[in-house]
Length: 76
Image 1: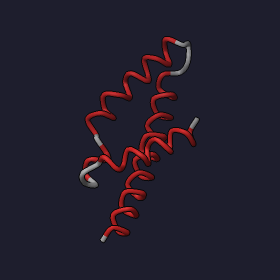
Image 2: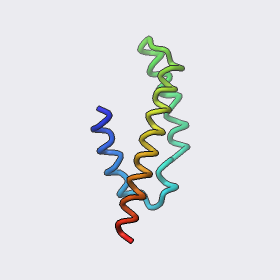
Image 3: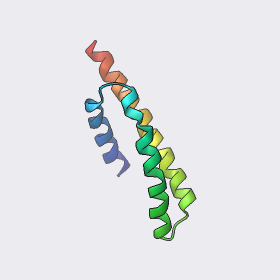
Image 4: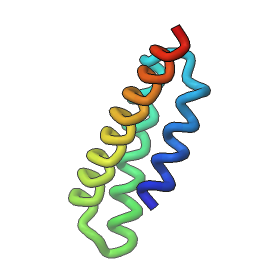
């Protein structure tokens, strides 16, 4: 699932006008509490799951940024 998601993350980089648009901190800030709630509703440790998603999201952001930069350097 993580590999498939990475394919989508890299494909989405084509729609990012600049590097700053990749991180989307407002979207991440809104998403994390929702993941905590989902976890708690499923009987899981909400704090752990929120932290886990935080790490995964930031990993994807870093990977998408690197991919975006690599693609832009090839265009120039």
